[in-house]
Length: 348
Image (cartoon, rainbow, N blue to C red; front, side, top):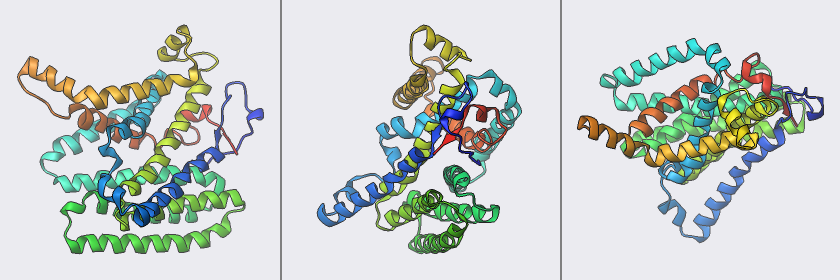
């Protein structure tokens, strides 16, 4: 995504909110916060957090309700509730649904679990870092080769870190060492290339964004090496999820604030619910219901009607499908020329 900075006062009537680059940059403050917590814990708390926090924020239902699931559901709501978008991307959605069914449905019968896990891990890391580098691209104004170089070094390092954390209990010592050294070498290369590429960035603000994306990976690597796995995953997840949510809320406010364009916002208008809170309320409510009760409800229903309990039909099946579809659609729905971008503008 190449973002053009448009002052708010210069926006046409159908665009009342802008995505603030300063706000997006502020989200990276989670990096020094987590590093400070790691320092305090290792220096004064005898590693209490390291020993008691799980290896992933996903183990906390509250985290999934606040950060993990809502932005995926919000993405699905934006796409599914607007018939214009559904018609525009209909073929993409159908083909991707079939691909997911084949690879993760039928394919799971033949493809080893670890291979599928690594595939999803690679896709997840690419999705997270492509979003952040893509947003920074418009600010940094890097040439194509520099953008691709920093992006793929970040993605490669991120994949090794992700796999090393989530498969640590099933890796041999030699494999774990190889992953750590590979990630370290890629991080070192990322820093060196960052120093070289920053010469192409014309503004101080752009340089700050470039290094924020680099430190996103470096901090995760450092926290992983120090065995603070929870923080190593939390840093990129929080930045990514919060950034995405800012885009969704801005889009829906600009699209629906003057005249509601779909049934959700028309109903909200009749109930005097402000347009700004509609998407957060819907997505957080659905995230809570699906994460907390979805599996139990489906299991209860299938047992009552068919005498068979289907486990994790919602958290693994439905939400897994929505997550994979989210990774796919986000690669093109926010690009220049897409119908989404008519309702997005940027300001510094």
